Length: 191
Image 1 (cartoon, rainbow, N blue to C red):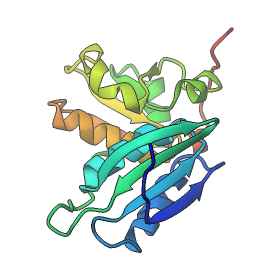
Image 2 (cartoon, rainbow, N blue to C red):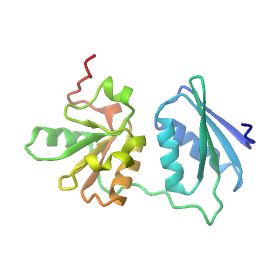
Image 3 (cartoon, rainbow, N blue to C red):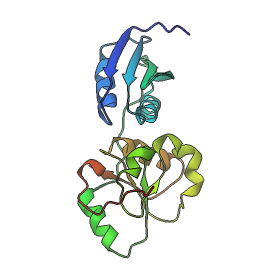
């Protein structure tokens, strides 16, 4: 399969949120209808790119994997197709979540990072549901409790919080800045 692209973006070696940050800037340089190839090595970039494209109106065309490199293809939306990029309105800081962990309040904590990220360090009691699997696994999440969503930096968890809210979950809170700045307890999966 040969894909004609108008631009290429090298995001190899970068982790969330950098592939999205760089893709946003590169999209500004394209004309509507043009196609960009985003090269990334972060496995989470697949769900990130798909989620970002869906939330902005740009068209996610597909991804090809060549060795360790994921080549994501996006088509820039026309003015009429663009959606205003929004942020989830309900946010909590890491420190506030740490206090909630010490309280007796009932809530669900969902870690939307990739399985490898979760395995090497997560908040005790956090449920691992990678962002790319969220839609198909929503039935595992109780709707009657507050839901806190965390990722590495707050970007994926923001998109996940918006997706949960769109599917009828009422009390969804994004945790920022996420695991990259988490100072509370962490556990690793045992082999």
